[in-house]
Image (cartoon, rainbow, N blue to C red; front, side):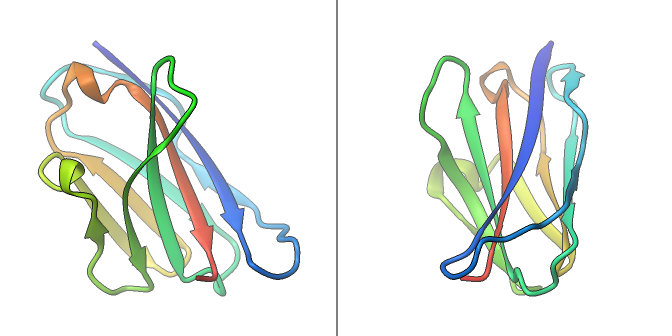
Length: 115
């Protein structure tokens, strides 16, 4: 059994952002299950959506990948086999874990940015 939790945040290089996010609740899943984590926000100016993984007892996060608008996503090498990023539109995206493993137990962060 794996425990997955999710958080969202917005980033901007200019003015502070007041963005409302909606995301999937924490999940407990069985190994080998396909897991979908959704994230959406209310600012269509945030074209970049990034996904991060923070493993248990770690203070740092690892970038899984990102997508700009509706273009094909880019993945970090260690994540491209097990994870899939999709975008429904500029403000809605999802992270899919293809076949959950114990090593996927973590907190997952969705971030949105202007660049």
